[in-house]
Amino acid sequence: MRHHERVSFGSRLGAILAAAGSAVGLGNIWRFPFEAGNHGGAAFILIYLGCVFIFGLPIMISEFIIGRHSKASTGRAYAVLAPGTPWKWVGYLGVLTGFLILGYYSVVSGWTLEYIFQAATGGFSGKTPDEFVAMFNDFSKDPLRPLLWLFVFMGLTHFVIVKGVKSGIEKSSKIMMPLLFVLIILLAVCSIMLPGAGKGIEFLLKPDFSKVTSDVFLGAMGQAFFSLSLGMGCLSTYASYFSKDIRLGHTAMSVGLIDTCVSVLAGLVIFPAAFSVGIQPDAGPSLIFITLPNVFQQAFGNIPALAYICAVAFYVLLALAALTSTISLHEVATAFLHEKFQFSRGKAARLISCLCLLIGIVASLSLGDWSEYRIASLTIFDALDFLTAKIMLPFGGMLAAIFVGWFLNRKIVRDEVTNNGRIKAPYYSLFLFILKFVAPIGISFIFINELGWLG
Ligand code: PFF
Image (cartoon, rainbow, N blue to C red; front, side):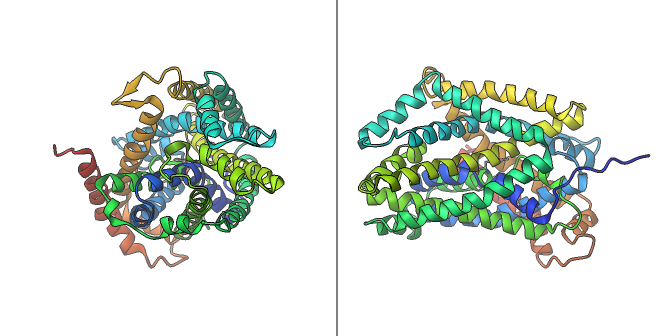
């Protein structure tokens, strides 16, 4: 029988940057600051870091094992590794989760294009804080304009996906990720140098444990899964393109580190600047769309060119970060259709883009004309965010941990983390202990505590 070689990333760096490209996104720059702002700043961040190390990295390595060993996208990986068992539903759940996230995530991604446009055409200049609030409200509630940008953004994602794994995903990540890193460091430096920025740094670094409730734990756990792209098999799909010499533990550490650094840097861009101009840190999802244009105007008002450059650079950065993540979300579903039903990549991608656009349209309208349609008092947009980030991702991650910890042949697990005995994996016993006990019990405990499943 002839084997078709599965396409793989061309280099170790390419693989790390593609996975980091998936992880680093709106979750770091849009979602992290408002979650931290709403949950008490540094206390939230400490709990978040705990979630990254205790649950995040071991589950990331599990997803890598599942993807690389099965050589299949997540929708098929469980069926390949555990044929004839109900585990295949975990794969399907991942595809569904990715689909729902891509729907509403693309809406916010589209907003970044509107803000690049506004920033570049001088739409920010001379506006007062109230006018920025009005600008965001008018835009996000407009029935057409956000949809236009949603279409453009989905078109960009579609374009890269159709180009394929090496010349689409890997190449774009190799250009976009370093650019993003340089931009965010420059912006953080500008922000920290503003007068009165110290209070923002304190907010980020000095924990206030009186703010810690069970809600904070669920928020931090959901944020960790969302930000690291875990729990829906996104990284497992990317790992199916990993070659045999990629070190899974090392790659997971690199991705976790890059992702956490970008989140903290995003905090260092946003909070010092917000405090410097007297804006509340708990402004919610609109934080970066209302406070930041304001901040650029007020902070650099007497050097208009600097205000202009910072504003354009920031929204370009946000759009790039979002794009590398929408690509990874799209890839999960596209690869699934391509492998399972033998659709061409182009046909699979067209189908997914169209279906996600439909979800995106509903999510976008739910912030304006359709805001009276609610699910448990949440708009459809917020309900999608809650359901996916706080329930489906941690649940999917827990199942991946149980699968690798309890079900998968131990020799496969050991061979994958040691590259068939060629490298050492001193963390192996701890890793297994976390997968078998700590992750399932810890995640269930947070669910039960917050969602009141015990009544
Ligand atoms: N990690 C991305 C972010 O932080 O923006 C979002 C994301 C991408 C979540 C891929 C889940 C996923 F599978």
